[in-house]
Length: 452
Image (tube, rainbow, N blue to C red; front, side, top):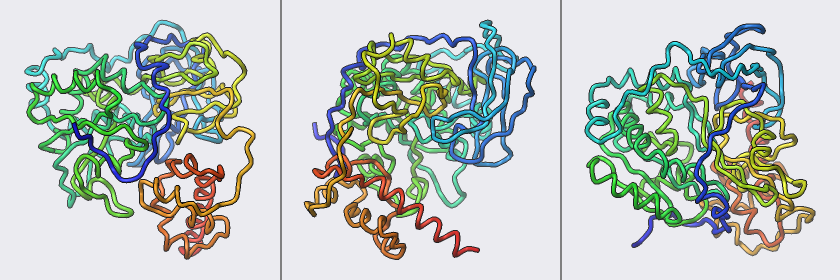
């Protein structure tokens, strides 16, 4: 079989064997949870509750009037104990609602029992009975964001510009980051929810075709999905070559459909909507039950973790509680990351909460670059060879350090997706991505000054 792929990319040791055979187990939240009012791209939410209020599990506790935003909900029932600033896993601090858990999980009255029979006929009949606008409304009210890490509000994607006709929904099951297996387990353990959600997303944007893309290192999921797809003529399974960053939106589109998203453009510009595999199961629960996004699969792994696991985790549970659920550390970690090791965000404390975009939490005893000094560029060109965006990371790194705005624009610095392939392959261990991030901020600052 010839696998679909793109030019460039790298092949890191994926270390998925630590958890890819480990079924998801439910984590029980402890005494207090911390719900950030910023869990998504776009405007943060304003609190809808006050200290001392009693809240139900699934109750909306934060909302913004901005279109690009997503409401947040309580993941337990209990009493609001504080509303204050707290360290955020995405960096810096954010306003958070602290809730004292009463351990009763009293559901918000708007949430209904799951009533959909999960067989192809029932699912299709149910989707056919719905109105597209109702699906979009329920997705928005449920606060669903992309669960692959970017956390873009899904209702925005489901409302493309009028001049963009979406003909294909592309479901991203690549999960190309090393260590992470939370999506893989979702495919194996709740495939019917994913198929139903894919149909709902397609109905919301009136797309005729659905492609579920899965990397070749998940043969059990591929086999299961190909068998299930026989009952769904609108769904096809695209098998991808195992390569990083295969799951990146633009690379995935190019690999599966051969369409190319223009520089500065969006998938909608080429008739596509892309969303994460487990986001689809969240859509099913939102539409059928009015259940908001208050829990998700999280991979807890890394060489510092004593018992790596996949856990079903409530939003607001701290990283430390999840490490404790995995029997703690073999030895004190030198680095803790939210997400994957390539694009994840390093953490300064384990007392930050799980958010909607937390696909994994990794702890390492000694990262590959730990204690190594940055070298000098030897012009080997390896970073150019592996760049999935076909940029020149070596030049962008130099121009970024020199803050050459015109050159950075000429070399399309804003097209860099910060995947880290260039830094990974560099024999001199140069911090290329960090340089380019600085270059992007220089360009943005220059644009802001020009607009004043």
